[in-house]
Image 1 (tube, rainbow, N blue to C red):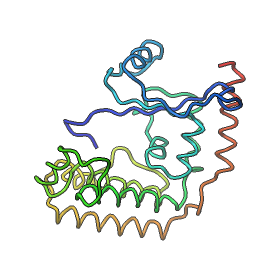
Image 2: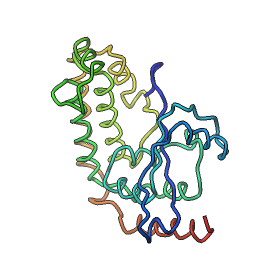
Image 3: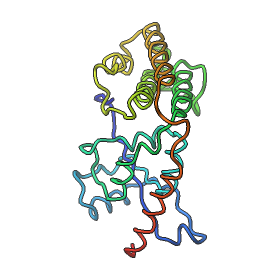
Length: 240
């Protein structure tokens, strides 16, 4: 949910050469610096040039699958990014994208719910997220809560409800998905009472979605493992 002050975060995954899976070499993730981004812009046919000060994190496919299976919010979200918001893709990611239902389970309720709860605790200054920086301290003093953290918590509850009820996430959140209300929170236009009422409504909706969900109790780890092995074998069969 972008505002005029929002920046862009980019996320991606790679399949490493076989020695990173069979030898002592290891790659989990890399945060790209300005030099990396400049090289990326030159070497890959992207939809648009990425600013050099962008936040870009690249993950190994094995780590990505592991964390997505565990219900990590940022990794599951990536599997539901629509095609028009992808600046570069590959057959490997398209394969994962098309089989994203393998990663879903009722465990989403606990994972997303816990993260949303923690974000709300941070938003109201009841729990520190790292150091309580001057910016967040000023926001809480001004609005009674930190708008970015509160909006993020509410967004996560909407996403979890969508996953449990429909097996998908809609990007961006539509108006019937509480977009207007959450945007008011993000802009600091909602009162503390309004935030708490919205949080309760979304929490109730999330609980009902969990109770009625047709998702399995656990994700399809075996199916994901087969996809992962296939992707690694195909990458290395081509010789990189």
